[in-house]
Amino acid sequence: MYNLILRDLYLALYSSANFFYTSSFFILILVLLPFIFGTSIDQLQLLFKGILWIGLSLSIILTMERIFNTDYEDGSLDIILQKNSSLEIIVISKYISHWVVYCLPLFIILPLLSLLFYLNTSDVFAIFLNLLLGSFGMIFIATFVSALTLAAKRTIFLKAIIMIPLFVPFVIFGSGDNSWLILLALSMLSFVVSIYVSTYGLRLYGES
Image (cartoon, rainbow, N blue to C red):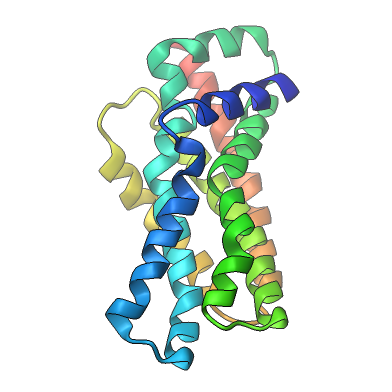
């Protein structure tokens, strides 16, 4: 699993600056907020949490093709399946590598963004905890959708239609306060479903 994670991180870092995709995406959205909604501190703080979750959702949807489809298109997936007997290990490595590449940058820049929006330490911690728990659940969902639609071509809109309703509970509860227990439960449920469905999708591909 360690080698699989390193491989994905290396490819992400050296392919068209994808490693910095999420952070630049969030910064662009948040910088535009004052121009759209004004500079009222209370209003910006209210919008900040919701925009974070919407931006996270869009980032995961736009990059989900890199979970399995990139390896499928260049033939690497066949080699990975041959060298690794455990499909669960492959899926878990994808969870970790995709989260590190496309979610971790958000946590790195979150303290700076919180200063721009005049958030106090307790608010930042609550946002951080919600994002940490919820982002994993959203990655789990994206992974099993990617595995199920592995051989399909040009289905990004179909995948988005499937994923957006599943992301809605994370966005709703993530934008609220003191909802980390609900996000933890949603992520745990997503993990159970994802590990089963993702391995099933890979098994179908391997047998085809």
